[in-house]
Image (cartoon, one colour):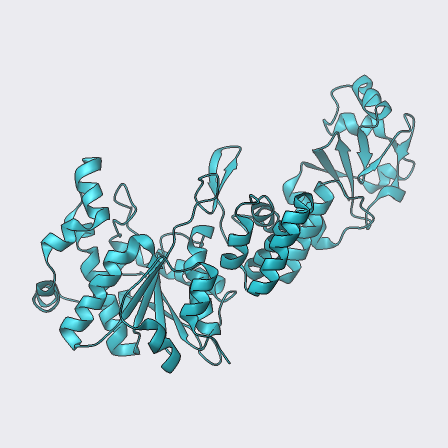
Length: 429
């Protein structure tokens, strides 16, 4: 029997704020519909979106219906919440293309089929046909400008940034409130969830439903998380500065997604396991104890990385990322599957190399020089002599030794390494 979803969310650390409207009692007595709005301005979700996504998934897993609302209409305007400048507007075709990608990514976390099937809706359907005079007459009259100006995100834009806010963005609260009213009337949706910066918009929708319908609706917000070091969830430091971690494997590879989680701070990992996986609380507690007993094993981080990469990219991609990670941390390599080989080829420098050349063997000294792992033959010989040269993560100490087809991993390639972290993959053709 499904548990009360509010209890599940609280136990796992999802709830920042919740309206005093009896949501727990309602969740115990009926199947609810809960919606979260998603901005369609990017072609992919990023990790900053995943807490609301996991929240919707828990609603479905506990007997309720999730609604993912694509802001095709509001996305053409822009929510000022959390923004410092007005965003660029999207074309209708861009919104529709991004919505298709959004559904594909969301379907890895919850189902759009079967019992409690999720819905994907686009608010352009009901917002675009609205006429201004009718909207102002029927909806606008229920809103106080004083209350809207008091909204934190609006006040911040007005007072602290100095650049002001356009009327277009200022009207966003009315449109999001109307979304909730429309979903309540047409789909029986009585719960809206979102990030903590959405609290004002959510409560505005609840008030509009009460004023126009006399109905009761509920709202809750999720925390906006930072890591223990103060960095926003989903941001990582790359060669070009701070980079976003995307769900689209073409934008962030499975290996890099896996690495993001494997590098979690010990102080964060138990919290992340509760928020970003569906592991049972008891199992998370065991992983937390394992971390305390032997932090060096990083068992909790490895499980977090595997579970989330499996959720986002699938079983095959997660296993390939795990194996590639082990290879690049020095595990001896005997064979490489096609998926692991592809993962390595995407993460380390690689050179195409004719198989024919290896039939008689090629001195490792020459290969180290050709792949720029050594600057000269003398440096290459010194590296080998000091035990710092590796072939397939096995130390190579033979100064005159030749690398041949015997070293080819699954006939696909040979992994060279200089020192602890400098890799080069020979791709055999």
